Each structure stands twice: as structure tokens, then as C-alpha cells.
Image (cartoon, rainbow, N blue to C red):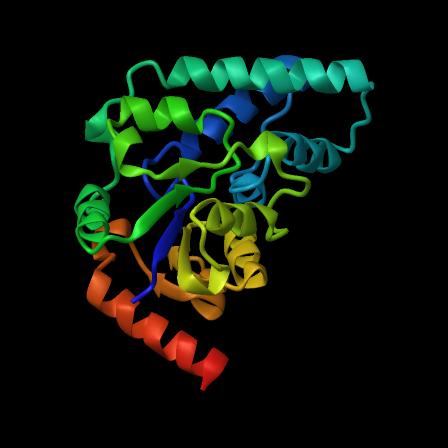
Length: 225
């Protein structure tokens, strides 16, 4: 049995990933009179706020000063935080609360490994703070996803090796980060890239310990024979 579960937040625990992109859309419209195509959402999903803004500016073929860059980061965060005001446990994605409860019942340690700086606030609003043994502060991580740093740090914070853990993600960048860390990547979503690079569930409601345990046994056998 794996000993740790390293969770992404947006799109895995709660459907807050759409709120991120809504905030970016507002920012692009207000400052640049531009509409962002929906395919850009996948490229900003799971990565840091700073890296997301770089993706957007590159798409718009824009160059701005460092001061304006920081101002936009701050404004986007305020827009996003305002959208969280009505968040409650009802916003937990289907099956996730039950899955977390099952993990806790099996003494699996839980870590939040999200690029979101608002992770602690969101978990509190969802009444899930007590379920997690640790929350990684992404501002302390040298490189964001798809680099493996945050998942390596999350495993270490649980006093585990990454190979003792599963990581759960809904983004390609996140899955790549889990794979690079040495943990077993579990993905949620219908993106073809997720299906080809991880053990995939179409929705959070499909997450189940039996299938993941079996996948982890195969994973460990491939690693150590």
C-alpha cells in the first residue's frame, strides 16, 4: 500500500480551476481588450500564477515592464480571491470527500501540492484543512510544475520517498511533475495526454482505492522487480 497521497487542488479537490481562467479572462479584457481562447486554459492549468501570466502574454505577443507584470499578478489574485467568497463544502468535487476519508481510514498521509497560493484558504472553506497532514507553500518551491520540485517537497514533508506516494492531478503539467518526481501519477479528466502518461480516471467520482492500489502494486513491481 502506498503511504502518501499528494493532491493538486484546482480541478482535483474543487472545481476552482475555471475560476482561475475566468480571472485571467477579466484581466485580459480589462487591460488589453482581448479575449483568451479556451484552449489556453489547459496551458495555464496547474502552473504558477507567474508562469500562467507569461503564457498569456506570449499568446498576446505582448511585453510589459516588471512593475506592470507584478501589478497584473496582484490584480488577478484579487479577482480570484473575490470569486472564492461563496465557496463551501458543497463545492468539493464528487467522490473526493469520500475518497479522502477512505485514505485517512487506511492511515495514508495527505499533502497538498498545489501551485495555488490560496490553498490553505480554500481547504478551510471546504472544511478539509484537518484532513491534510501538510500544505506545501508554492512560494518556497524553486521551480513550478512541470518541474517535480513541489511533489518532491510534499513527499519529504510527510517523511516519505516519492516512490512511497501517489500524486493526483488534472493537468498535463502536473502529471509530468509527478512522473518526474518518482511518485505514481493518478490523473482525473478526459485529456488524451493524461490517459497516455498516467493512471487515469475520467472524473473524480470514479476515484477508488482498489484500482489505485492495484496500479501502485504494478508501479512498484516495475520499479523494484
